Length: 87
Image (cartoon, rainbow, N blue to C red):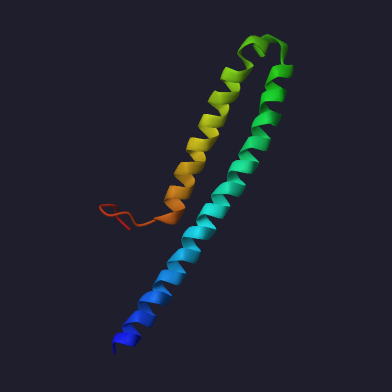
């Protein structure tokens, strides 16, 4: 009986470890993608002559807006039935 409980907990731990590790790896890939696109967006904004002095600021604002929108979408996708909300 004790051995069965240990095996069950070990299995649960293994599954949780895999989930957390895969989440961390996906976040790392997401960071790499974000850094690559940051350079593209910054370069594109800097090419526009009337925003040349504020290119980094405008780039940061655009990236922030896109990121917040992405976070909202992922939050709704990952937890569609939040407590207190009607189904």
